[in-house]
Image (cartoon, rainbow, N blue to C red; front, side, top):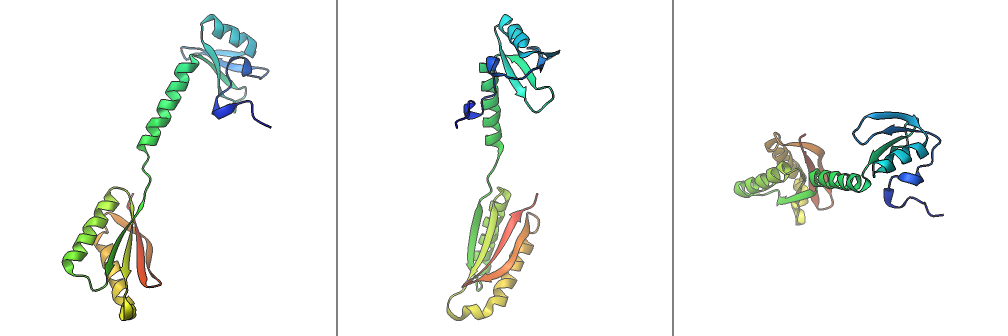
Length: 174
């Protein structure tokens, strides 16, 4: 069975089916509780639409407005909200436990930049061959990185070994 109300469109004019509604006028003042037929007649006198604003209230709330303008405002608000939200990605910085100081500082600077822009950082130390025996040095390196990024990041996941890598997850501080 298909619904009569496609795409989240609020019921308007004749589609409002309640025994009584609370009516709000075009200028925003309350006009009281009445039958939908009477409210629709008032809306038509002003060449406007009767739109159901809230069906959760008792009685349901309807408003006399220009529906085209109302719909445009709703879409505009939704676009603005979408613009403001930021989806945090997980950025990765990779290194070996025998990393040089300058290279390490470059990784820290990149991680700092990622965290400042609101992304999470996955710091990974890779092992090759027998290097895996020195996982304690890798953990020390990751903890040092967490300390260096302490003012902008909090550790979300402590250093742990996964196969031939050791990784830690940092997230930006709120």
